[in-house]
Amino acid sequence: MEEKKYRKFKKIFVIVADSAGIGEEPDAADFGDVGSNTFAHAAESVGGLDAKTMEMMGLGTLDDIMGVEKVNDHPKAYCLACRETSLGKDTMTGHWEMMGVNTKKPFQTFTDTGFPKELIDELEKRTGHKIIGNIAASGTEILKQLGEQQMKENSLIVYTSSDSVLQIAAHEEVTGLEELYRCCEIARELCMQPKYLVGRVIARPYVGTSKDDFKRVGAHRHDYTVSPTAITAMDILKDAGYEVSAVGKINDIFNGVGVTRTIHTATNEEGMDESIRQLKEEEYTGICFVNLVEFDSEYGHRRNPVGYARCLEALDKRLKEFIENMGEEDLLMVTADHGNDPTFHGTDHTREKVPLLIYSPAFNNGRKLEENATFACIGATCLYNFGLEKKESMLGEPLKELFE
Image (cartoon, rainbow, N blue to C red; front, side, top):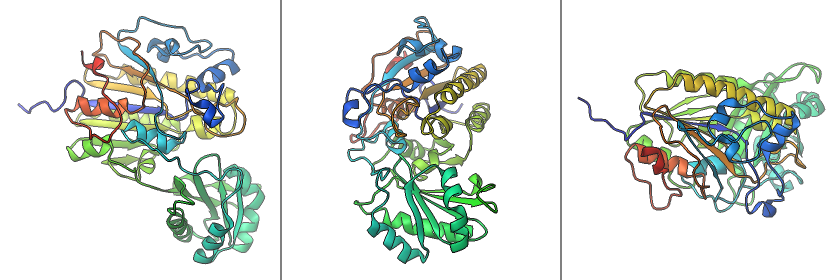
């Protein structure tokens, strides 16, 4: 008989509701985020959240969320709030910390000023294209403003957001995909300099004939990221021969490091479809790391609290479906990577604690746990389950209560 290679769970699913924070961090004032609470304020916008699945997992005991009852008796689920140790409130920093990395210097943003002239000048020189834009903007709106000019000049639209990102938009037929990708590779090289360091450079190809019908081609989007600055739990799992499946933008966030397979998804529904499909796979031992991006991209940054609330309710229904397909050797962790309060000022992420809801049919003593000082308890717990040791440099301790 093959030796069992894990303590309790054969598959661990870490599903990240991107930006679904649960209230300000103790240091929120340092980030200008006092009073932020993504979950609670989204719930208030619709007069109360219908989230019975997460309610059953103890969500209501973590904070006052309108419509969500405080269910103290949930033997099949553990719940806790987690604080972020790293100095940042962006997607990469949050996800890296889950896997044990402490980011001490946050990635730069250029939301208010655009990118420095010397960077833009060098990008023009190296690519051979005129640069237009260089502002913080919605990807759809900037095409309406500058798409026709870009086509006429074969220039490049450079823009940013409240994230640490440099995005380049160009028409697929005028500029061409390969040329756009070449220019983005140059931008990535330039943005590796400490004075310009951003987390991601993104190629944003589009099609159409005028501002009335321009459309971004999501399937041809390409992210140029940076690798984690230290070893992660994913690296250790992969090196030990376990599956590390990346769903959504996880592969981009980690620049492919520590990943054994990648499935790109465009929507939350696609992400949950893929999660449930992998849950049903029999020949699978390891972790499935899932990012559900629409909370952040469609509703948080666009300051749409009602849309955010409805998106949370949609996730709740899919989590019910997921749980109904779980077995005794499956573990589900539902969490977030930062906040993005859709009722808050500006369009930036918010420095918030995150919920961590943990479910398995094998549990009989589920309960609320003490608040954790780092997101890294997630990666540490994954390693502990598979009998692996974290490196001394890594953050986080395992939640050993799960293995009682």
